[in-house]
Length: 253
Ligand code: F6R
Image 1 (cartoon, rainbow, N blue to C red):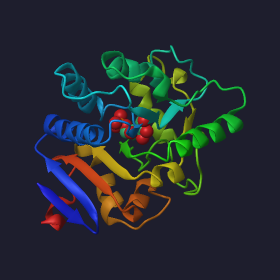
Image 2 (cartoon, rainbow, N blue to C red):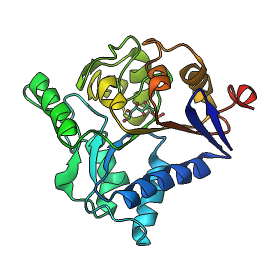
Image 3 (cartoon, rainbow, N blue to C red):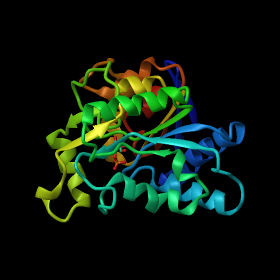
Image 4 (cartoon, rainbow, N blue to C red):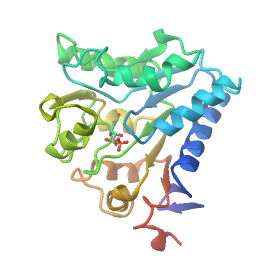
């Protein structure tokens, strides 16, 4: 079902698989309309299904990534690109190794850059030089973060070094063998980069996201819930499975 709430499009799908398929279709149509699209990409559990569908579409010959440019939202600080939990590794494992993307067109923050501040400025500049992101894919943290823009972030920031919240460290620990190995810092695009994207698709799945989804869509715009800033963006589609939509569905109808 499709709803519109104060300008935001909200697609509610039966389950994770259907929601992932819808997201992949949106990415595919973006690339079809503009083969040189600049995509903003997220990692985490949520978009894995979408990436699976994109790989399948590529294998069937339905999409061509040869001219597509991508910018990832974030990367752990001080984790080498070959580390099995780095977002570089994740992107190769879930997408890039299976499609015909030109790796020169792939940008992922470098968590081991020598001069972090200068590096972050160069990441912002690269995005700007491509004319900003055409389609930004986002997930949402249980604390309302997008990228790694944690509660109380300054909305005006571009790419920057983030001290991760205890909440986020705990959530990320499910991917690491030992809690003490979970990175405490990350490089992340800022809200400014995200808000300059021409279109945004945010995915949220499962009942543990239902509360924060409500705050993002129906709560006040506040840096306490960084994703709430999306209410002010002109072109946002939120894709949810039924579980993540539980706390908003009655008000949408
Ligand atoms: C990942 C990212 C994060 C995740 C969020 C949700 O690149 O930017 O904001 O989207 O933490 O993670 P999952 O999908 O694992 O629940």
